[in-house]
Length: 285
Image (cartoon, rainbow, N blue to C red; front, top):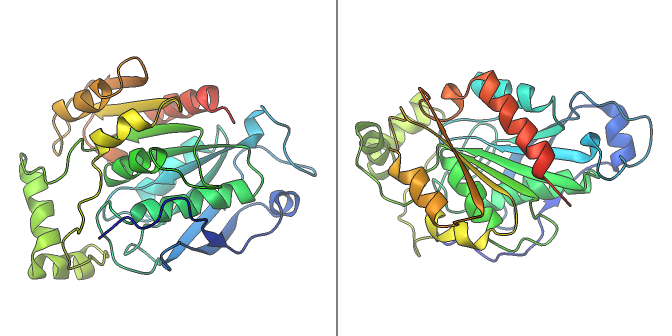
């Protein structure tokens, strides 16, 4: 499961930004550099455009790309809720990772998903947004870190938020993560994933093993980086966010949230609002 060539540009079928803005929400399929079709949606947010490209530096030139967690997709209620809150701060692009929802391919659980995110970010820029931020949860949180550390022509990010992400691969220290490993590595687990959780999982091991989130973090600077984690996360204990933050001293901002569990389901509207405000203030093109 190699990550492929960084820097290649994703393809999409879109309209120019002025037309897009007048027509409001969009739904389309994007195409990644490795040939996977990705289901994606665009919500212009609470800002209404009359004509032309939004003025640089204003709230309405910001797009927030949401990267969901494993077994999620853009139509899941918890993903729609996240998008709805973040839409108060700018336009929002949601998409389903490969193997999830209506997207093609099979999930590689954080490896080739970097290509999916790059396609979504490129779409946001092609729609005319001069500031684009990525906000990822759990698996999506690891993907936004790895994406920001790579060179993606036309698909770079101006701010990164990683929520409930692992710091290192192959972690089995909690019961939920042992269940995830069974789901991913065993044939019967992948059947449960396909028919019970609506996710199609690749049956091959990573080869080579992709760069880990903690190895990616030092490469993100000077792009603003926020790491968010709950002190009641049942999947990844607090050594994970602390390891991520320690990998970029003086650069990464760390929020340890009291009483919070894991990922989108545990991110209440107040936290999502604070994340949206942080993105709006930090993202600079």
